[in-house]
Length: 549
Image: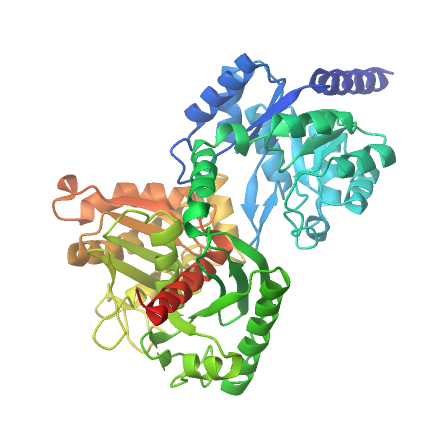
């Protein structure tokens, strides 16, 4: 009898909580790592401003931000935790541990991504477990009607159109769709919230007219950088309307990524396909086929691409487009005159660049390196790569072998490296090295990082050891180049605030005149397609050189 009373009370509480959101505006207070407002105190102030403006709830990412917002305002808090998965893409609250930490921090509703991709990672079972064990309402973030129906069947209490336009099968949708909200309302018995691409008050009104229980707005309210960029993009579009659309491709040992780059610096029609391992001829056919696909897509959209950029593993002579040297991750790739081969096949200008150099170029144009003449970009993952700007120019070296940062020696007689030398930085700061420091307890570097952020002592110790070796390598780079910024990218950097914090602590101990430098360490925010941005940039530069002043 007592259990029935408790269950009835819980249902009444959830009904009351959801009713408090009805007809109102929920403000999503989030910011990426490099955003000036990315800290719990700033999120709390955004929440206070939203409350004063009449918001009925707040959506927040990460337990620290949830806790800060709960202290600042009495409004209901929807908690989420964004995490990058092994496929390189983010999921929203993918684990029970994330949900539990959010509830402990004070979240009253937990949002879980329930897209088809997320369901493949066990999202629907996760919903059931959260409802059963944490006793809080769960909101599903979905992109399609089918996903919404599956989420409702799994027991979610409400859902939002958050992922509409952000999944592989809906990425062609670029504007808010009130008709989709109406379709959800017609098919479901639970409250439907409108979220995603709601940029104006009029769109919010259209959402309510379509039957939305509430509307969630984030970027259009709480991202001053993005709001400013929209105004700037609108003004610069006039100046750049005659600039060329180009195609960028990032050829990796495992996957190849491609996209169309607009004159405004936006990626469109992104694709990821496996990279063949059969040798040079197969790689060339692969690139021709993928480039042809993207060129046709650009042409069908009414904006034909004028040039192609390739970012590739291996060292590259960018003047000739030749692969000077590549490991057997790309068999037979060394010596390939890639630009000439593709120009002959595609009949348009082609520019070729090393993949991490391309990432550094992208950071210079679109990321943390904007307006900075001296910075270093490092990728940390299976291996360690680098790209360096000095005096506003990309460092290439006499033989195009510059920026081999992973092969800086930090131990004179240390671990054997894949390059054949001993004691290389890569041997101590690769994903395999991080697993080695964890002494076999975990199955992947990502698992070590997640465990460290959850407070596991062994994982935290492994990450600290990793940071100590990385600090030694970065110190050598700093003493040589004196950069003002080090940008970290790659799998080990993602969702890893502890690493940046450790480096902020360790580097001053290893660097001469540390207090006189204004060195900053940041994580890249360009994400999975960073090198594609760079490939598009070198394509546009090559086209400008070809056309002349």
